[in-house]
Image (tube, rainbow, N blue to C red):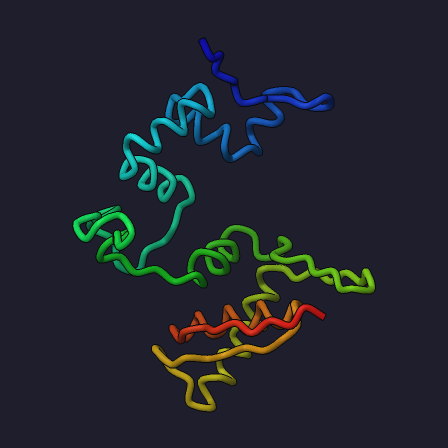
Length: 178
């Protein structure tokens, strides 16, 4: 008989209560009365719709238009459709929701090849994204347009990606890694 493993609640330096309050997986499992990772895996396989709806609610994803079905597998699993009828935007869920809660909290920490570190708060990120989105809008970029980005992995790359998303344009990535 295989013994089920419980999710570890503590490390050498922290108690269960200290870790639980900051551990999203443990919080999710307790909220849904799930004891082990094996139980969570089994429940997610047996009831895919329940699982993804619970994850969506737990993450607090904002929908501009609510979905009417979590998953539609009528065309077969390889062609299933998720969150049918719903519309959401990454800007609402990554930037705006955090600005409302804690605008000065760090959104990103970037470290370049030389070890130089830069931090960006959610408010600073919003300002940079808005400036870039307005510049794109000024050259005619609109919803549905395709915009390619060729930038190294740095802060400005993420600002550009969010700005394109804010406009509803489609992003194509051409990242340089140096």
